[in-house]
Structures are given as structure tokens and as C-alpha cells.
Image (cartoon, rainbow, N blue to C red):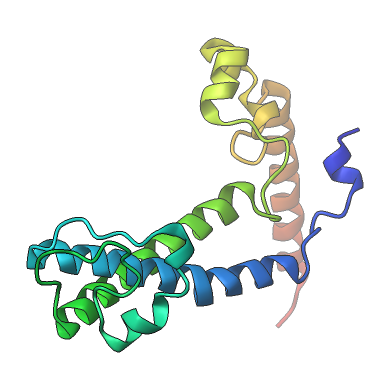
Length: 178
């Protein structure tokens, strides 16, 4: 028996929500601010301006104030981006990262999340394993709701029982008096 069927299908309780909250409140805005600064300084002509790894979180207050050179160890030799350009690029980058995070979360939830269907093969896997002719021949077993088994005996029984029920209904209608 599959181990997944014996275990609790919903192993996450607060961990998933905490991870999403951390990503939404810390990671996405931090990356958005730094990516916005990089794009703003590129458009202003200051070149590739990336903060050192130890300055990623300590430079955030300066970026929020609008200082495009905050946290850059060798200060750029050219003029850096203005405050409005920094905020506009940071807002656009944060919005793009938010959309990507939502798309990635949706993709994960549908394919790997706690509600995924276990043990189902894709169409390609089933055709590779069984072959096209065998799939066609046994479609009533594979998808009985879509392809019910039709036999001559079943059709004859259906005709006989249907005509019997129709005869009984006709007889009961004739005996009713209004």
C-alpha cells in the first residue's frame, strides 16, 4: 500500500502560512528594492550597482529614504538615480516579483501541494505504458464514466425492460379514472 495513503494528506498546518508570510513581507520587498535600485541606476547611467552581501539588509533604510547609493561599498563614480526614479523602479520590480511569486505558488499548489491527486498517470504515460490500441480496447475499464461497456446482451436487456416498463405504464394509465 502506498505510504501517502496511510499518512495524513495535510501535513502542513502553520508552516506553509508562515513561509508565505515571510516571503510576502520580507523577501519580495527586499529583492524588489535592490532590483529597483539596480534598474534605476542602469537607466541613470551609473552602471551595475549591486550591494555587497553583508549590506543587503543594512542598506534598506537608505533605499527607502531614496538614496540610490546606500550600501554600495565602492560608491559609483557617476551620478546615481533620483529618488523618484528609485521608487518607481522599485515599485515596478516589487510588483513583478509579487506576480512571479503568486504564479510560482499557484503552480506548486496545483502540482505538488497537499491536495494533489496521488497515483494518476498522465495521458502520455498511459499511452506509453499501454499503447494506443489497448487504451482504445479497454477504455470502458479506464474511464467507465465516459465509456460505459456496451454489449449486445446489455442492449437487448435494455430494450426488453424498457418495453416492459412502458407496457406497465400504459396499463396503469388506462385503469386510472378521472
